[in-house]
Image (cartoon, rainbow, N blue to C red):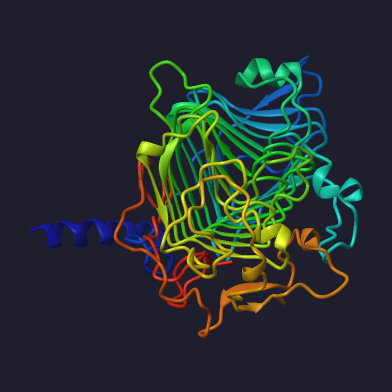
Length: 476
């Protein structure tokens, strides 16, 4: 009966429109994709001119292949009840002294084949050859626009296959009032809602002035990202504070000013959970050299009441090794770590594999082995005391596919700050192969969804670092 009814309707339509039109225009009736909801126009810059305000509101869908520009001096705001979805292949050009403020939901849904780009409206030339320009002259640290701010009502921010570049301009009083952020901060990305979720996967963050990413509080997931030239003369690349919970895994850091990843429970808001971060299979190259304060880290740092675990990480020529702070003390009763690798080309580096003055506990699964020689580490070693790392200088070359170790003569370890043409994947003969711990789970507290959430929570890998011989892990 249903078949006959459909045929009658089809014949009626055909009688009016013609059989040819029906057959050619409606063959995809069951696979038809509806148009994007509320498409954002790219015909003119997003502007606040003539409005008497420095704010321009935006919501809806930025369409694939389109380029959108924010006028100089305007803050682009997603209101608390609104959503902005960026389809794959969107370019968002931010004018001078602009920011993208998410009080509602922001989803930049780039893809591997069509990544999204959020960066300055003007073309900026990168200087990525090792030591090719001094930090003071490098535009990466100059803050060409302000950054992305997830305010206290932002329930979800997702950056997937998205480039964020040259941010870190100083926030002003207007931005502070809108987003609840400090008027003087210079964060490339800020998130400040412990009930909300910040998700960053398969993305790139290039440049920055202070903390390139500051999570004042929130549920977080950082998976398979690449971080370059982050922080001018200070700032931790990913700096999470009191009330932040989640996982950081398979990220590549090169040339960070201070730590790549830092967890602290400082500033815990009333009702917020204790900071609890799981970090695994991350790779850190030449971190910590632009930090002007002494005793700061270069790769991973837990401090001031934070708990969690870190396994399977790789640190190469970082100024300081994995750091657990004793004053103010991390929650050491609820911290677990091991199977971490370090390599150093100088005794200044190897003498800080276990940073002097801190309480990082050597583990039998660490590389180099804590029983390598009588000097490293000596019998009776006390946490935080000075030791002699001479015997492990240049030992256990990680054997990256394309990165010369030891560093060539005439080039400083601190000169490496961008990936460029380097390839940090592993040769089959690498000592990192098969040394990973896999009998634990990521801490996933964010929504899992192919668009409005975390699309892939890659589990711990058998090989150390962010690249795996199996092909999982970092895809850049």
